[in-house]
Image (cartoon, rainbow, N blue to C red; front, side, top):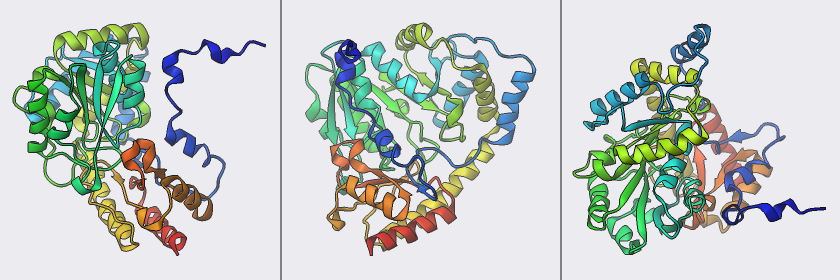
Length: 386
């Protein structure tokens, strides 16, 4: 019998399965589990957004759209960034609507990376960046961040990782899994390095609306960065629309055109129903979005305070909806802690090291769960620790 594995590409063989998926396979079939592991809102998409999707179907909008996405949606995206951050993108040739930010990340990397190119990214980080660089034929170069620096990457660290093979830097703030946020002058340090070495920056800002202390700084709004930034964002987290899969990329026309080329040969376009919902979300979804952010903030304060009172040191996350407590005081590994907590107390969290080696000794806990579930999970964690 032929071993079909021999047909697999070297790039696929170089990438292990997602640590998140591997862990949550254990959760399937268990009852009474409180899951703090899934990175998605527990809110349902606001009704008027769902109505827009329903109406689009009733009106018979079931066809392809432009490969770039509906022009009405691109105009709404352009307007929102002009209003929020004072940055301008031409909806005709500088915005590409994708099926989630994950596709946008993949397109960005495949559009710019040649074999041998290096791409710098900071850890802990979203699990797709490193595999995405490898799938694009590039070489991932990680830079570790730490609890002591509130998981912010510095320009000095990026500078130290740059060499003549470096092509781009991936930034991801507010950060998944740590909840870290970069201050404006932190980002300006990175921008200086990008200019000095003529690098592109892929800035994933899908959690920009979930910034709790102060206002988010859009990377492309920094001096000179608009022309060398591929800005990624989407509506999954801000408007509780994960299943509708609407993301987008913005950047220089030549790069967006290259991403569009790949997109039109693979995905063609994002689903028209979801694009109709996204237009409604951007035009009329501000109040519901703000209400969700206020609720996440309330949960954030309760949950992080609770973790610290249990002796699990947790710095204050300033964005996204994740707490990243240290479990080093327990003497357990991240995987051991997470597995034993799941089996003994039925609380599902994610080992921090699946997001990179600098996440060793930490856990990712999503507080996008109800207050009652968060309180119960803290009680169960206390019982586990005792």
